[in-house]
Length: 167
Image (cartoon, rainbow, N blue to C red; front, side):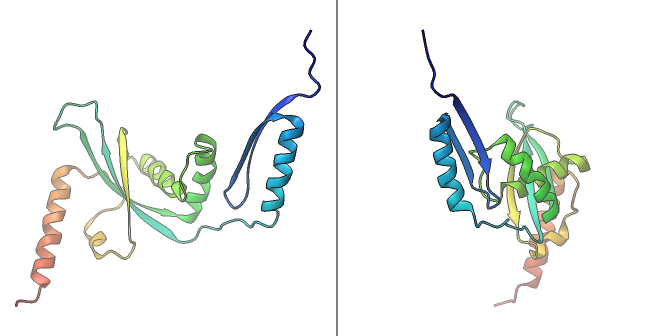
């Protein structure tokens, strides 16, 4: 006969500061750990996101034949409200592995999908400073193919070389 004096439990809690509590074990041991964690996080305040961020999203599909793997690029601007909305999903899908500020990237990928410029596959991201003068050459929220990117890169190179001061 097996007798259990107390049950086994698992808990996961996220603090408003973003830290995550996770413990499993007897009810008593989890309660002690939770109490200690709550003492540390009792005065935390919610970390407000502000402003906007711009991301370069490069899509590819490694299952396609060589030379056909690149699917395109989209430039996406994300608001703090969009990042706030994505934060819950990031926490639920990746409770212990998400990186700080990953909600911004998640929001950019979701927005690209909503705008119809996310072709699927894998995505590489790069945050572009919002004041980068090269951003004026790109159209936001559209999927750009390799030829379009190369043309824009050429335009940027021509513009910067014509602005160079002769020596």
